[in-house]
Amino acid sequence: MRCEQFILASLGITYVKFQNTFIDEFQEYGVTIAEFYTRFLAQITTEKIGRVLKLHLINDYGNVWKDADVLIFNTGFWWDVNGNQKGWDFIQDGENNPIVRDMDRTLAFRKALTTWAKWVDSGVLNFAKTKVFYQGFYPDHYRPSEWGRPELKDCAKETEPMSGSTYPAGPPPRLSIVEQVLSSIKSPVQFLNVTTLSQLRKDGHPGRYSDAGNGFVDCTHWCLAGIPDTWSSIIFAYLTLDENMA
Image (cartoon, rainbow, N blue to C red; front, side, top):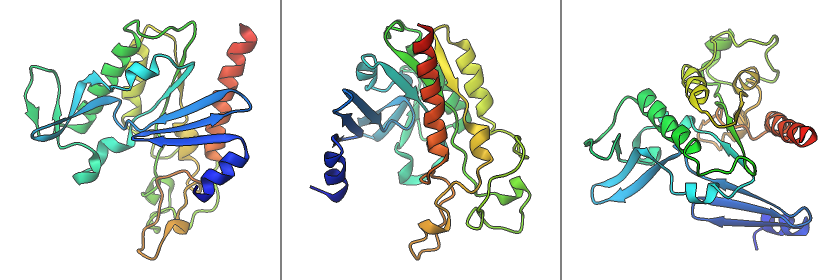
């Protein structure tokens, strides 16, 4: 048993990793939390030519999602990754359309999110049982000129949040796509728009502490206490508000 598994077991928490799924079972509370590592929400199939991202198909995990009490969806970061790390080799929009090497990523993002929205509205979910959330973008901080520090290279030396309530560079361009697609959904979906409050926390990344001697500074992940706790508090507030109003 690995160290972290031993610690979790001592707290009454069972942790299981299976393929692209991470499951935590909180035995004392009878609660199971599953994280499905589905970067695009759409389905990726393995074919003779390679991995094909099918923008018109919801991920196969949809058959499992429909039985959950609470669903929290998110996609964004991986749409701009290139090379082998991007997770697919080809892309297809529509069963009768050709499979291509690539396409405009913003358009692909919109199409995949629209596929997810149609799935939400398809009647597969029981909204009397299941609460659905969509969580907004988690921004990175690799462009210090966006917050008025062009002399810096990244977030490594940032130790304080920005003042005020607006981010000088404005919201990510694709946030408007999220808002447009969500507004088209007829079913009850709660938008957790955490983007701006996260943009203001240029100090919230591992930063220079992620440097393992290779010069890499992590201004993407949110592994420090504070911001993820705020995201969780917002979700908890929505859940308890609904419960109190029931």
